[in-house]
Length: 237
Image (tube, rainbow, N blue to C red; front, side, top):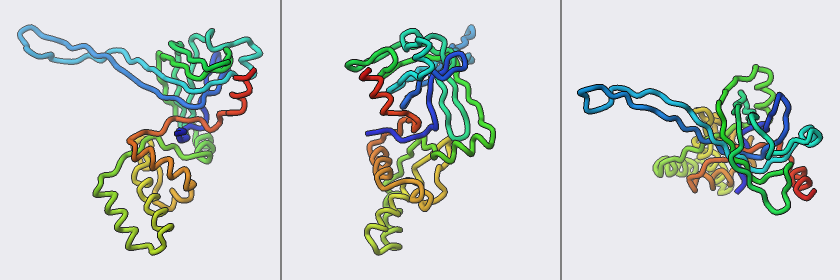
């Protein structure tokens, strides 16, 4: 199942230049720690925070025209950045090095199916208000699906069964209410009410999100700016 858009653009950057466009990503952060022990104590008296590490798996990448003309390929990349443009901020993974590249069939050095990278730092920057509003107009960021309890689902179904006689309207509105309660970003609800869900999502998109919710899966961070036709053209080059 295809992921759901949560970013306005995802790309690789080198020396301030956009060198590759990424379709989607999955990120994992880890942090080491060290216990501080004291003589005569049976348990540690404190814990010292250690270094953080970031691993990101990128799915489907293609090089930009600038990168191709400069002779840049994925295998030669070092000390680059991954930039993720969200509705109200940018997340930048800097000091990146690739640890794995997966090719498929006739792929070349300007196209890759999967790239795994490690990053030295993660920087979260808030966008200026005008730029944030412009990005928000492109999409809503749905970063987390929170499953409802059986009791909450039953309550929503009973309320909509009593309120609406038409089966189609009842089903659509109940599904919208479920998504309104389940879709979150940055710890807050994405939609204020079920009407916003109905205005924002098509029935097919609602079905996709409900399937992810039922399967206990989270939406992938996918890039709506990704050009699938360019990816296929470069793959066949």
